Amino acid sequence: MEDDLEDLYENAPCGHLSTLLDGTIAKINGTLLTWLGYRREELVGQRRFSDLLTGGGRIYHETHFAPILAMQGEIGGVSLELRTKDGSRMPVLVTSIVKAGSEGQPQLIRTAIFDAKMRRAYERELLDARKAAEREDERLRHLVGKLQRSLLPAVLQTPPGLDSAAYYRAASTDHVGGDFYDLFPLVDGRWGFFLGDVSGKGVEAAAVTALARYTLRAATVYDPDPAAALRNLNTVLWQEYREDARYCTVVFGILTPTTAVGGFTAVIASGGHPEPLLLRADGSIHYHPTKGRIVGAFPDSRYTNTTVVVNPGDTLLLYSDGLTEARPVGSETTDGRYGTAALARFARSLAPTTAAAAVTAVTALLDTFGTGLTDDTAVLAIGAPSHRA
Image 1 (cartoon, rainbow, N blue to C red):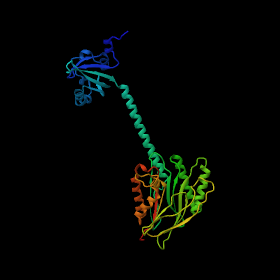
Image 2 (image 1 turned 30 degrees about the vertical axis):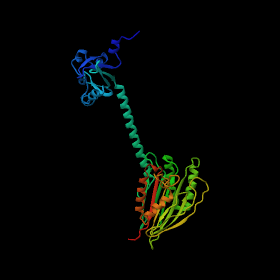
Image 3 (image 1 turned 180 degrees about the vertical axis):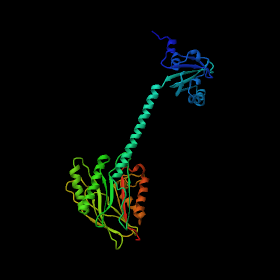
Image 4 (image 1 turned 135 degrees about the vertical axis):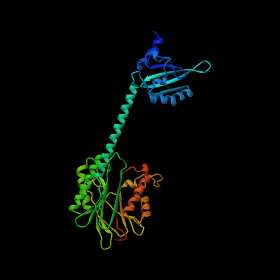
C-alpha cells in the first residue's frame, strides 16, 4: 500500500515549511506545528520564518542565511534555534532551497527542519569529555613536572670560588624523563658531582633515577671515590632491576678546589656516559677520555678513575646524549644526528667561557633543534673564573 502523500507531508519525521520570498509562512506541516506548539492559523500568512527564530538566530538569518540562499539557491545543515510558543528553545538543523517557476524566476522557499536536541546533547557530551580530558592532561603534566623537579636539585649549589650552572630539557611534558644531575658539598671541602641518563621514560625510569641519585650521594659519604661509587650503584641496580633491564649511563666526579692557584682538580669515573668537554681559557677544547660499562646492565662491571685539571678560565661541561643524538635539520652526519664533532665545533666557538654562558649557549642550541630533539637532555657546567675576587 502506498503512503498517502498528504499524510506523509503532515506527519513526516521532520518539519516542513514553505514561505514566500519575503519569508512569510505559506505552508507548514503538523510535525513542526507540534514542535512549536502553535495552531496553523497563528502562523500561516501571519508570521515569517525569521519570527520563529531566537534573537541570535534572526540576526544570523538576516546577515548570512538569507543572503547565501538568495545567491546560491540553497543552503543546508545550518544549526539554529527555534523559539516555541511557550518561550523555550529548540535546537534544529535547517536546510532551504528556492523553488523556481517554469521561466526560472524564484517563487517560494522550501525548508526542511530537523530536531537537533539529541545531536546538541551529544555535542555537549563530547565537549564536556574533551574539557575533562584537557583537565586530566593538565593534571598529568603538573604531576609529571612536579615529579621531574623532585629528581633534580631545587637549587644548584656552587663550590666557593668557582661557578656552576645546569639545565634540563624534557623531550615531552607527558612523561618523566630519566636524566639527572647534582653538585653537592662533602664534609672535607671537596664536592661531588654527577650527571646521568636512565634508560626509558615514565614512572619506572623515575624510580631508577631516584635510586641512582640517592645511591651515589650515600656512597660518597662512606667512600668518596668515583669508581667505588659507580661499582656500588652497579650492584644496587643489577640486584634491583636485572629482570627489567633497567640501567643508566653516568659520569661521577669528586672535585677538589685548588685555592692556591685557582681552579680545581676532579677525579672522574664514567659508566658508559658521553665524555665530558673541557673548554680551556686559551680557546682550545678537548673531550676528557673516560671508560666504563653502562651501570646496572652487568653484574661484575669495573670502573676506573681519571683526573682532569681545570685551571682559571676553564670550564668543564657535562651533558647527556639527548644533545648529541638530536636530529636537527641540515645535520651533516650520515645518520642525521648532531654528533660529537658538531658539539666540539660549537664548544670551540664558545671557549673561553663561563659555566653560566656555556649552559645558556647550549640551551639556545637546543631551541634550534625543534622536533629533532627527541630525548631529554641535561647539561651541567662547572667553571673556574679567570680572575679571583
